[in-house]
Image (tube, helix red, strand yellow):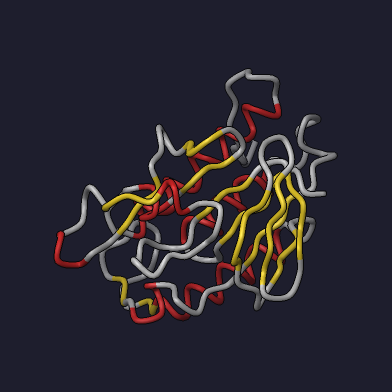
Length: 201
């Protein structure tokens, strides 16, 4: 049983996992089981080149960044369970416990965070009722988003990145994932607003 399962190993998903991972010393996080399904094959980063993103050296390839981010997550926060090479087909049941069905396994989780891009090939059964046209993409691109209010789709279900309706910029996607991570931390902290910062002090 996961306390939260992140679906998607791109920018928003890994950003979310990094923030959750960094909060491990907080008393309300120490006993939480966190997982991320790291499927990256269809990530838009596979063909990206970054020259204009804060903190990332100019000329960085998106394909390299995908690998580096998972390596960073595994090295810095090994307690975050990475599930590679699985694709989610179906979400079953409702809050407070969901079943996440992939091409290989079935997982149970209390919260789901979806960050797999906004292509109109989205086909996760159990979430299709939330699909709507993307509000910040050109109509001819036929992008979609999941209907949400401040990233929340339904009780226990969150969406991040371009699938949440944000524009396709790495910094925006990363911020979206980090924002939902702090929402989850606040949830675990009994509704008391919180975040996760490291310091040299």
